[in-house]
Length: 122
Image (spheres, rainbow, N blue to C red):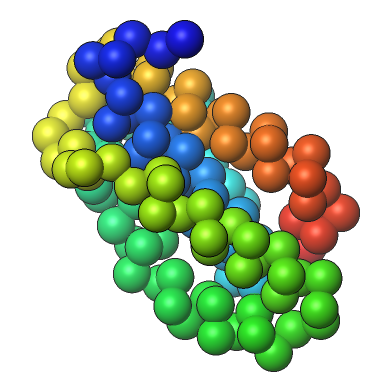
């Protein structure tokens, strides 16, 4: 169980993973970052911000795709409210915060890979 002091960082990491899942399901392109590549002093608000802003456009794109991809993207979209921290951390992360963020990211990516594996392949 992660330290409750880092709960928002875990959620922010899970949120980033969910946003990347939607991006892959909607052929948004790119390769999800590996958790070990997050900059040491990264800010969750910066890591998540661009993907959050692009979410609506990605969903509109997904609506025109085949049923399996649309259904999967809609399922992941419905997860997002539960992954939003009360306040998205907007300061540089300490080593412990970065670890919590990366752990949340990895856990959510693993869950989505297991559930949507073949659909996530480009």
